Length: 370
Image 1 (cartoon, rainbow, N blue to C red):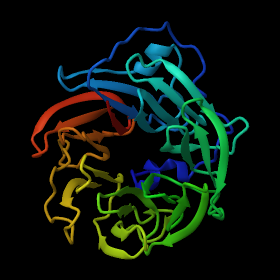
Image 2: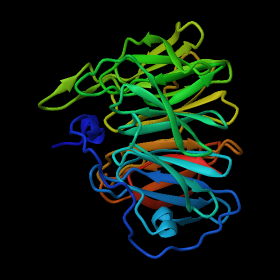
Image 3: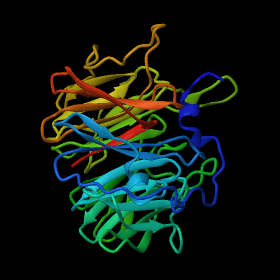
Image 4: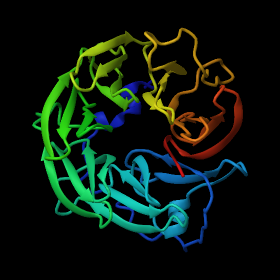
């Protein structure tokens, strides 16, 4: 079978395990870490059902990387399918989707401080965490028709917000979250073309926005309160297809939901993703290569900002994730290579010049900057 978006997003084509690799089994003796300076966490997804998600930590000053820091610091595995990571108040919150767990680890010692699991909640496969306040965080989900709520200080589940979304091929997915004023926006990826709007003061879904393209995969908000959304357009395979497989880039007014920009992109067989710089006035997107544009631009540049590496046969590598250091604008690009071996990370400066590159775990997908 050739690699396609459906292969990469294999969560769309397999059934859910009730609990898989919860990350609690002992694997080794614990090591001590003291990461007191700046650094970059690299979350590696691993392979679905293999329980080989991992976490790396990169020192941008020394240009050194420590791989597998979660298992080394805690003597137990991170779990199955590391989905996202976000930092707040010295804690890294890591959603491990197929294990149904959200870990909280100390950003200096990498030791576990707490966890949220599916037990007694409406969480099934957690995807992303968004902090509404110091004591309230939202969690999106691949299968649950709820956005779950927990206290990030205590790791206690406190409730759930019904999304009202009907199942589509078994999925009720909600994905990334951004907040503009009192409203939290989330994109529904799997077999959907919706954005949902949640009133974060009332913890209630208040409306939805329908896009012309299917499967909004990634979303960010700029400094002017505009929503930037990229869809993957569905997928196509030799024996199955869904939608037209044409990605779109949108800019919408968050308050009104009016679409101000709708541009079709090149068919992307790897991944599509959006990221912002620290001042949220520059957009970076993965569409085979890396493109960069100002938030006031009317279209994506014709030429890429950074071209994907190519193998000996001239085939473009599959870029899997992107992060931008909010302090200095350094751009970190994750390369899944062949989805089975250790992935690569390329670090570029704000002008696009390569600074460093290093190997991490399997399928690196998200970055968090300390």
